[in-house]
Image (cartoon, rainbow, N blue to C red; front, side, top):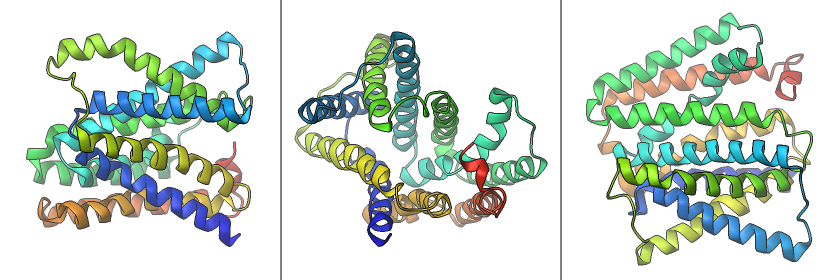
Amino acid sequence: MKKALLQLHAAVFLWGFTGVLGRAITLDSTMLVWWRLLITMVSLWVLYLFLGKTKRINWRAGLLISLIGTVQALHWVTFYGSIKLSNVTIALTCLSTTALLASLIEPLILKKRFDLVEIFLGLFAIAGILIIYNTHLQFSIGIIIGLISAVLTVLVSVMNKKIIDAYEPEQITLYQLTGGFLGLTALLPLFQYLFPESWSLPGTWDWLWLIILSWLCTILTFFLYIRSLKSISAFTMNLTLTLEPIYGIILAFIIYHENKEVSKWFYLGFALIAVAVLFHMWRLLKPGRQKSLVD
């Protein structure tokens, strides 16, 4: 149990570094994600072929998984775009609304009944975002892009529910990353048209940060996360995952001194979001409701 908990915390802590590394890498968000996907995809294929873990899937499932991978890639593009247009703290704050956005979006897609309490909590979080937005207008575009990123990750989560029971997590990850890379590659001409200066090669330090981002913050964290799930409860897992943006914001404060880039109103807005997220998590994890985490 202790080992599994350490593995989970290590994975969440490394995920917290993704935003910090995104700010350090000088590439624009599209090329950053393209290189991240390329390095991660090639590394995983080599590893899985060596371990004999590659399995074929039917073409229909392959198309769906590739589509999900493309949406995941666009989530990363918008997440790093939010960082480039604002900072790590703002981007992670927007991303922290994911659980509440999911409670509002999932009923629309999966045709479930709305929960009035969750709607209220969603409005509570929106109030926090509006406070941050109106007091940090210099980051307004970054905040909007960050919220789009949060919506995209909700869509990935909802779409994954359609395939999660049919395939092993390792296979889903491999084919999603491959599909994401191919999908983003197909979209590169569009990005190049919209942002003519977007194509560039990584610099010397960029290569180091990209390798760390791909190997440590993507591949290693995935295996740590999967292994930890075998021994810990849903309560522990979900509670620990809420620490990711907190870890990331603390790291951004320490490394980039981003606490000097935000006003006191940011902390009020973030507090409203945090209260809504934690109360939402508490409701989900109450005895008798934990089944909803698996359904």
